[in-house]
Image (cartoon, rainbow, N blue to C red; front, side, top):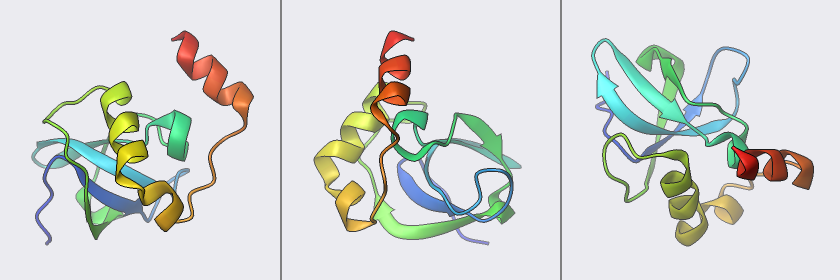
Length: 100
């Protein structure tokens, strides 16, 4: 089984968010905690079975248990949004996420 660490970009293989990219924010065996965040990849923060994740070679520079704003800033500065071809949600979803 691959080793997951905070900042690792993964592809979700199962569940309602299957096929979407996410970022590992914390590891508490036997689960990992991931986020998109929802404003970028439509994946909300949740615990996930590592068997349902496919780690990629990419890693964001974030601290363990980072909040969604920190993860979003790391996505923007890394250039991975364009490299992975991630389609950002419509502005309405971004506006609602900014209110929270």
